[in-house]
Image 1 (cartoon, each protein chain N blue to C red):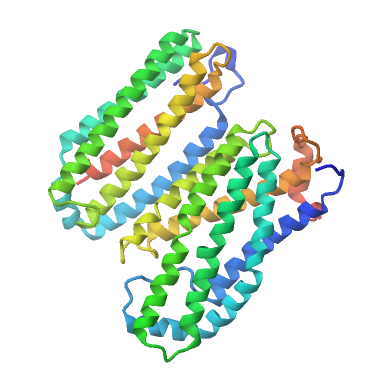
Image 2: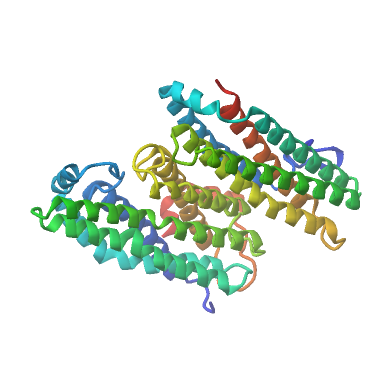
Length: 254
Length: 191
């Protein structure tokens, strides 16, 4: 980065991140209503009812997902930018970019297409709907490996960094997030109980950690942009008083 | 480990405070796993008791003692490093690794025995929790070897020797020991 005092691009990226995550939550939890996930133990008739009950939500919801899914590129670029700002090899940022670009497929698009295919023809054979249902939710669960490795890459970068881009505790928080991704793995084996894909351990606790992790990294990215001086050395430290002032005035970031 | 001594009055905790954030957060995550276990156990009390009877309490006690010794050893290593006795500190660290390794081998042996008797991951709900809790702890312990490796690297070279980093790594090791004690109490002892 060679130009100075111009944070607009970074702020556009950061706001894209914030809008994307909120939209993602709205589409999956409220409109399509595929999260929290339903039980993997439902029979074919119950699954046909499940598709029928949220038919338009799935169709409209995933139509919007397919339109905005590309925003993940800006989001990933933002995160890779933070790693590039660190005193570590570029390989970390490249690995992060590649692996999160991959996450878009199972975590959003494949699941969206499978649910849409199920919803668009209500008269489809329930056995086929059953197949699409399993395919959709297993695809969603399939992002666990991506988030596992992605978190470990970010962890290593933060802990090795000497520029102080992020605090070290965020590196350790990445480790916590990575370890809760491992906990999702039993969802491939169990159809009911706490380890199934809708279970207390495989979904609820994992989601609580993920939401905390996401909120933390959005806040830390915001602080990084506030301090950014576009030089190549360590980031300027944010004065405690200034940090308090900025934390108390959301408008200050614009 | 003791907290701040004379010359370190400003330090609130041993090692990086960042690691303590990890301890707190990971403690919360494990507490939630334990809460789910206790609820499920209460709902299927008889089944959990029946299955628990297949675990060998002596093996659980042995594993706990092994990890407690490893924790004591890493504390001795930190103390030696504080005194500038780096060779001794390194020797204690190797002892920690050795006991950590004994725990891993013992755990794999225990799993293999249970599986051979027909009690696999999907045998029943108790055994699902047993493999889950001991498995996720096992993973934490494997990561612990990376932390011990970092501490050994610090102690080995006069050019490095960051006391803070050594204490940070020791804090991680104590945490997994602490988590094991809770897992042991829940899986092997609680009736």
